[in-house]
Amino acid sequence: MKLIKDKVAKLSFVALLVTMTAAMFYTPTASAHGEKSQAAFMRMRTIHWFDLNWSKEEVAVNDTMSISGKFHVFEGWPETVDKPEVSFLNVGIPGPVFIRAGSWIGGQLVPRSVSLELGETYDFKVLLRARRPGEWHVHSMMNVQGGGPIIGPGKWVTITGSMSQFTNPLTTLTGDVIDLENYALDSILFWSGLWYAVGVAWLLYWVRRPLFIPRYLAVTSGKAASLISSGDKKVGLIFVVGTILCLGITMGTTNDKYPVTTPLQAGLMRGIKWIEIPAATVEVKVEDASYRVPGRAMQMSLVVTNNGDSPVRLGEFNTASVRFLDADVLEDESGYPDDLLAEEGLTVSDNSPLAPGETRSIEVTASDAAWEVYRLADLIYDPDSRFAGLLFFFDEDGNRQMVKVDAPLIPVFI
Ligand SMILES: [Cu+2]
Image (cartoon, rainbow, N blue to C red; front, top):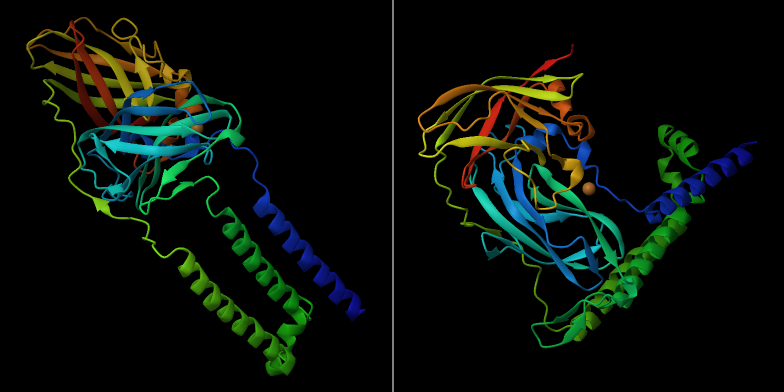
């Protein structure tokens, strides 16, 4: 009876091991990245991405495309998220379907982390080279240490061709031309395989013993020492000595083979140039703001003062990459992703040009299914329900002014 139980326990353990191993190798194709499940306040109150441009919608393997635009680092950065003192400009794509050929902030190459200033606006560009054919959702993204990845808008991009054609040639500092795509792949496979085999052998050696309950009983009855025989100690020693010998010998041969190596470069770049934006001459005060759950609409009561010298109209409200436009003032011609664009989503009670010197109270409604689809409405269940975003005002000549809003949001359920 005991024997059978032991057998069952061992078999279950092996089955578990096999399942876990299989799970590690099971990588289903992911087409999106859970951008909708990122907390709404993270998307609304940290990095505001705007003027985004994806240079291509279809690109062949080995060809390049770029994502460029601007991002505003919000002053009202949430207390619960670390400040963007160590940030890395990235892209959100499902695995290495592109390689990043270069990224720039304020015209400066940023292969490393950068320090960003709250309240400033930066322009950026990421150059990508297509690697794996398919249809992929391509986002801009900022990785913030202590804050996680802050995702920007995503657009579907198709990569055509065949992955076998992909090459990633590179000249090393010692003058060798290598293809990074398969450089030293044999060594990588060999070492991964070797340590995997050693690990499995070690596990199997111990798994064939009585498992948890018998061991537990032996330990509690003070016979723990009897669980490890002198044979076990010898085997353990062979593993230790073997591992050290193997490392020592191969380290020598590897050093001979690659005499010059430099560590991966990782430092922090400060003093990244932001865009000098003249202070906005339009002043906006949020009197109150509410979100009507049944109507999927956010309503703001604003007091707008035009301190400039030309009449302005409100054209856009941008929050968490969703753009609500007043079609009378602004039409999108940049090919912005449809699901993030509410072309007629912005309704203004009186959007006639606001004359210089004039102050007006307006009711602004931003309504679109995106509130629910992009799960921004979840904001109302936060302990600190605040919304934030960018308002864009335009004068007759199309000059744009950006005004930030940041205010509590009160939900209305009826
Ligand atoms: Cu996505």
